Length: 360
Image (cartoon, rainbow, N blue to C red):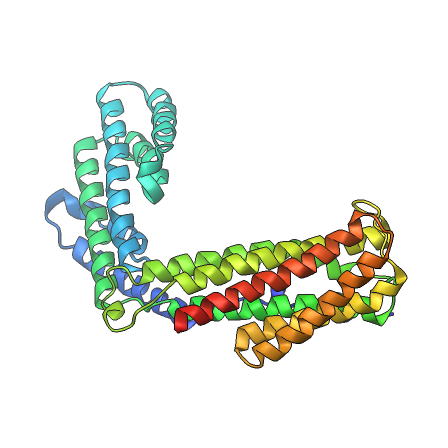
């Protein structure tokens, strides 16, 4: 027997998106401008111009808010690290003592969560001072902080000039893809039940194990979409209500957990792992039908087409499985499947009704 398994949850994400290309362009411009500006600083500060492009590269962030926040965190963290290094050089300790002290003290301070993304640069800056800048720590510290600050400023300005795109469409598109993936995964389980029982392959279990990670990725994209609108002029004429997306994510997370329950129960019925489960032979066909109808219901939820008709068919199919369960003297494994089917149906019902109420 051959079971056709859809790999929707494993589709490779496109790398060269419009969003990513714009970020690459901003980074290229920021690094170039920072280097040219850094070379204009007077005196010994000019000798450390190579830190300006590094600052620009780190200052170019996906959103305006994250660019400003990252710049502040980096300046604070680097200043602390430079201070640690300067004090150790001034102490007159030999390099083989001050270098490990700089690294150790920097790593300890880097544990302060409020330093954010800049925390990793505390020990780096400290070690650089005690090793590279030990000959002239005053000039090195001044040049490092001045050039890095210029780079961060340039990166932030470039971010403001080339306004980052709003990620609202990306987030909603990812949620729509996730719904489609879940529908395909549910249909795969239906195919397993309706093609031949018991199946001779276990690859249909793989998606169940990865499903929650896909939900987490979509949730992170929604979070980034919210942040992309903060301080972004584009948001003035394009509003974004994230509550609907947040609710969809939570509903999908719940549906994913119930799909995992069904997958585990089916695995228990076939291979007695993780525990042995008994599924009545008379329920196999109705289980496959119910899963197939729920797959269609998830698609209807995604597209908004034929929702009521699909819901009615799904409810009837799930009810038929419940009737088989009530007639059968089986243990709780089959009951888990029945509960999961009813819960999935109810959770999608609830989400659709909430969406309709919000639109009314």
